[in-house]
Amino acid sequence: MKLLFDQNISHKILKLLPEKYKEATSVKSERMLSFTDREIWEFARKNNYVIVTHDSDFNDLNALFGFPPKIIWIRTGNIRPKDLADLILQYEREIAKFISEDAYGCFEIFSIP
Image 1 (cartoon, one colour):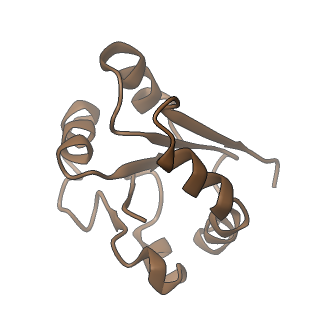
Image 2 (image 1 turned 120 degrees about the vertical axis):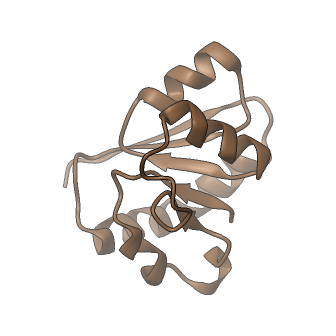
Image 3 (image 1 turned 180 degrees about the vertical axis):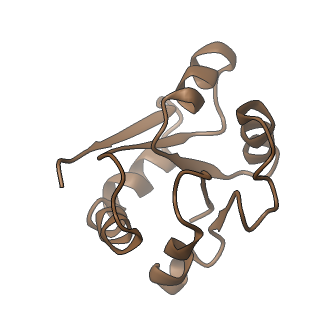
């Protein structure tokens, strides 16, 4: 899966995901820490990434401009990279289905740690 982890998610998550996520990257890995949300959104759109974030900002951009890129909005508050990786793996089927369907632009994962 081509996931792009926003700057509010530790880039360490990349080492915690299985091989099938080898195309995943992070804003930090792409050297985009100083980029605006719109620039990150545009990078994701042009490169077929799904943005994974804790913020509503990218969902707001999708409301204004449509999608792609699709957004996975993690609504747990800040959690450890390992716990977030586990959460993504727990919802792996649902995320894959969300990515494959054209009708939806945002997948929210709401969990209280």
